[in-house]
Length: 497
Image 1: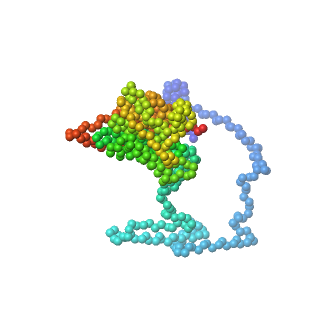
Image 2: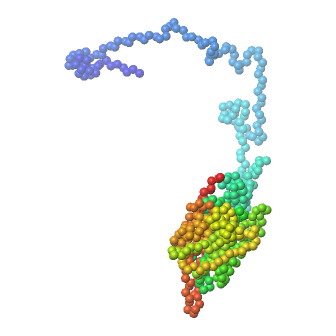
């Protein structure tokens, strides 16, 4: 759009002063105030001369818009042409349909076509009336459901119950190939799922024990029991039983657990009745042997498999006397805590190495260096029908502790002097702390086997004072052993060879 040109300038072209409205000449210098006419612009040359013609499309290129061909339209009948066939009649309406009334049924009506009339569907059937409130009712209203199509299962009849325990196979997390059996053991690599026996700690007044799986074994086959009771006259009694399952046998973990439990129960029953310490220990070891034999009788092993078996060692402190009993190579040590006494080993192994030393055929160091050194010659189990328990009684003359342990500890502290060097000084006042540190020492030394340690401080607390009249004052029932378990820890598996 072009703005119109004004006839009068805004300033005087002679002096530059603004003129008054409608003045033809400047009131200051008298110059003419009319705008000078503008010369017309020269014409622009036409880039397309009149004699230029537009070239048509090349012969090889088809015209995208062809010219219409003269003649009748395809839908117009030409003179002499045959009459087109009559279109088929529209389909009959469905049964029960009512035609729409009115004349608006052509192509212009919504939802209709030129060849199909429009119909109105029948109204829906009336709903079942709901009984009034307070009236008779046969139960909550139900929503009718259509049956499933033929050939398909009814989803309403599917089984949603949980599978029976043991019916779904559980794969081993150790090797990833085998299947765990009912006892949680892999049938391919032998790995067992972690249990509450991997690391166990128990403490009761005057005695404590700790058991650990170790760093190389797939489960803990050791077991122990610690208890405290009193004689009829109030003399305190401390009991510790430690068992080591024989790895080459079947179900060694069951054998050790049964033997430790039965021996502890027999001692708790016999000692308060006045049975001497050695006799009570002998009965306890024989009862433990029969209990392990019953494992094989209830569930016989297949031909070629050893029956469940374990070793056992027990220690009983009654006042100032100490009684020990054992079968196998689990041991008991006496460690004085006054700095002047000499430590000693209280048991003798039932092993090949011990037999060679007792017979004078080999020295102790030479026998222990042999690969057959740890082969046991006596154990609890059906494969050893003639069990001959060993028992011994000692009377310590100074304060100290009794260390009852499996070979998982004494393999790293065989001699009594070496064992005394690793026993913590606070073991007599804090036996649980002492047992923990001894287990830690075994793990730090390699942890090649299960480790179980029980510690009994000696002497125990003084007997209860005598009541007036010469009879012993009534002593309260000793507390039941308290169980302290630490969370199951992840044990590194040894590298495969």
